[in-house]
Length: 291
Ligand code: RIB
Image 1 (cartoon, rainbow, N blue to C red):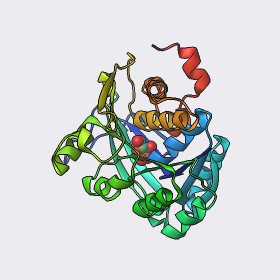
Image 2 (cartoon, rainbow, N blue to C red):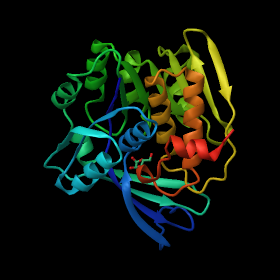
Image 3 (cartoon, rainbow, N blue to C red):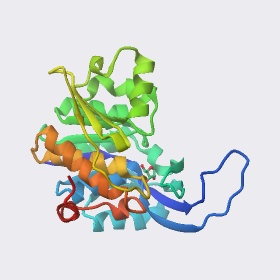
């Protein structure tokens, strides 16, 4: 089994700042670094670190070869990462002293992916596989439609949130992952409650308050308490949660166990600075003895 992940690949440009910029303000950062990121890449690396097979469907420009090499080193299958004549995506990430962030994205090659490319990547996929995607690439509807025709499990992490992007794929989804703000925006846009969504499993991450799992088939709504840690940087923690969750389901774990594993990985992630380069693995989770 494998997780085919249609996802962004970014150079993450980190700037430590005393506080997040206000409109019109100029501010000196206290630290700067570059790392591998993109919501899609973070999830692929998390899937690989959770011991599942991550097949990444994405694109970079010639300036992004380092990113593809690094993804490969991290155990991600990159044979369906194209090199296009478009610059690689990047993100400018400000992180303040409280671990809060603000992110500006330049999509670049991530938004130049086509249905043809996704179709060729999915040729070898079967109904035992999972199709995962987020809202940082093109060809989302096309990819989900193809995956649905193959009978794959379809998981959407609705970030960066756009209600129209969610609505366009909603009937195709098996699992929808959102944070609390996004969940509120979605129910505001559609009316009704999360239990009314035409998606079997809806997972809402609540940061320091844990998460909720709504199973609309069974009519259940379960809460999972947060794992207490002191965060230094929340960037990529949601991506890590989703990657571990999807990997665990792909490996046949029940949803409760998959959520717990996702929470454990996410809890470690918020104690680290960085994104794809610092995603924990199963050994880190075992060693941390989180509860
Ligand atoms: O969720 C964090 C990610 O969002 C960063 O890695 C950045 O690249 C943006 O895609």
